[in-house]
Length: 177
Image (cartoon, rainbow, N blue to C red; front, side, top):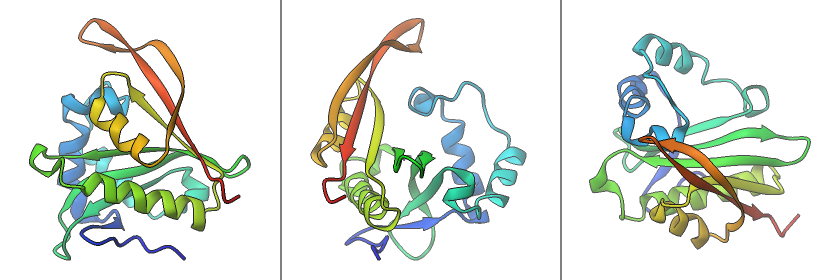
């Protein structure tokens, strides 16, 4: 069993106390391009989402975890497994760190490493994939650090400020399975 605790961070399930944090992230237009969000979310909808966050990954087909540094509970970011496909043993993976001052401190790197290990050893996944805008240098560096390989480009995939951008598909195959 892989633990979801690293040297400086840990991953935990979402809690009702995360309402304002998730509200802030989901309504931050600066990250809508990476989350495929087009409209703001209400606190009511996020509260309903949190009430259903107890669903198993096999039921919900996704797993969203809060990235935390201390036991006082405040989340620094979120990391997700999405499009969970147990038949083909694969899932998408995404990460967001909310505040600029928390970026570049190895938080995202440690969180990604923990979730990769969890996905491969606890969920027995064969592969993970990430969709990353080709101009998102920080995310490309993060995912390639862990062996994700670019396997294709989706041309003009993201419309951002009336300009289309390409999105790359990165994949990590679990060589142990």
